[in-house]
Image (cartoon, rainbow, N blue to C red):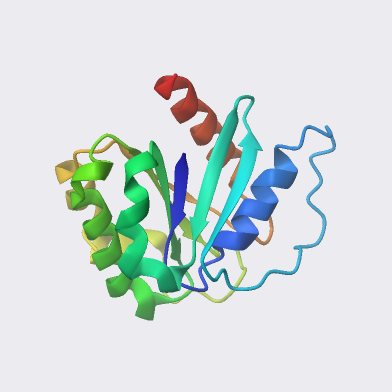
Length: 175
């Protein structure tokens, strides 16, 4: 099980829909226009094939207080941040620190996704500035987990192939 977590409005639902389309195996690789989405209330399960099946459990951002009840079955974690919303940065950082310090997630691989890059919305800071401000190199260095980062645009599809590769490599490593 792979958990997809992050604050409300960062693009988690769109990411899942785009990853599902990319992994569908139709060979076209064309994403087309972004599908409509609604805020997730509760949880959604989606199976993505990379080439083995990985179940992604998306939890709504408003469910943050009960995220820990889902940690037990988690083997990998996608944590999504909104690169176009620097006002959300400190809250996202607190959430990330909570996830990385959770005992149940000590063995999970973690991918931090900086979404809404590549002109989706005006960004007031570069990702490097955001990483520096939240001291991400220090966070990664002290984490018990294997932590990676990627810049994406779920809307445009940029960087999503790297997410699928990470899921595939992580799932392969988990056997």
